[in-house]
Image (cartoon, rainbow, N blue to C red):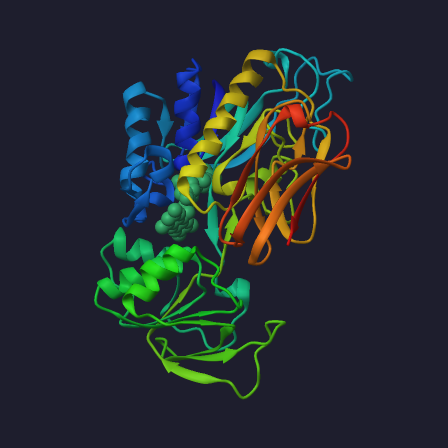
Length: 440
Ligand SMILES: Cc1cc2nc3c(=O)[nH]c(=O)nc-3n(C[C@H](O)[C@H](O)[C@H](O)COP(=O)(O)OP(=O)(O)OC[C@H]3O[C@@H](n4cnc5c(N)ncnc54)[C@H](O)[C@@H]3O)c2cc1C
């Protein structure tokens, strides 16, 4: 069985950034496992530009952004295997496992000092072209990204003709396989990928009739509403949804209805749109089946792992970053999060464990989730969060034991935008939960 210090599951922007940073820290025994034929993750199909402004100070296309990291992986000869899907992560029961070294499968993150070489190793099982492979490793980094919600996930009634695609699948057909998906297009959902696809399909000569969004606000970034819809004269109808799909072999039409404040279709508002293609951009879900199997505790709100300020999950030695942890708005933040994770993984390898993080981060009803969800109260860290609905002239407040720890005033906070705030250890106490609230 192969032995490594670190196995990275997924060779997208998060996995690559973590690998490069670990290498720069001096960790050599790394292995990246990627299920696709090439490294780069979902960015390989995002051929528009606008990536990298924060990370590199210039705008790059998705493949160009990914290539910056792939070049470093190649240059440093960081080992990776493609066409290899990780199917299981278990823990090897050490021969001398004793009661004083229990395996934590939830709750506190990190436990006292101990050489991580003596800690239980993980066994990572993967399906590769040459059959099943197993790797014994001290650290596992989860960077599997996310997947799209499908028609099944949102239960649109009607027949099941060809011509219904998620935005990412349509993007892959057009940008990677040079195949057109249709001619008369309707888009459901104003997520960023859907809006980017509205522009892409228009540039490719199709007719995009409209984008319909069930919420009373666009779910993607304002810049994409402007640059992908308004600039191309594509109408966006808020508080609307598709209530029926028509067609036998190929899609022939969709029925669209207005919805009320509870997102229920309003009878009498139905309107039929003849079309041959329906593109769905109705949300992304972090891909965490593997994490669950490994015993990692998930957060119902983020749908990713519960992590501490070190990006360590509830299972010591297993870390998570990127879209598998929380759906990001910008890939630049994905890379930066993975680099922070790598610094912590390095510390874990060196010290044998990470300090305990026993304080919880709790939120009011206006915040969807935060990363991290657990902190020590002794270190500087960066918190990221999203608001549940658009709010104007608000204050994001972090407090502990009745004291304000950090505040951010915002003229506008949108669910589409990830909010990041630095938190200084000097303002924190080592007891009392950290409370996050949105005030306006
Ligand atoms: C369809 C789609 C389109 C997007 N378009 C844009 C865009 O235009 N602009 C933008 O800023 N952001 C876009 N995003 C967001 C983008 O995904 C993130 O910014 C970034 O790519 C996330 O990086 P990641 O490494 O976390 O995940 P990913 O890029 O998704 O990489 C995850 C990698 O893990 C691999 N993997 C998953 N499971 C396994 C396993 N079990 N074993 C081995 N490998 C595995 C996958 O094959 C993949 O290569 C898009 C996302 C999606 C889903």
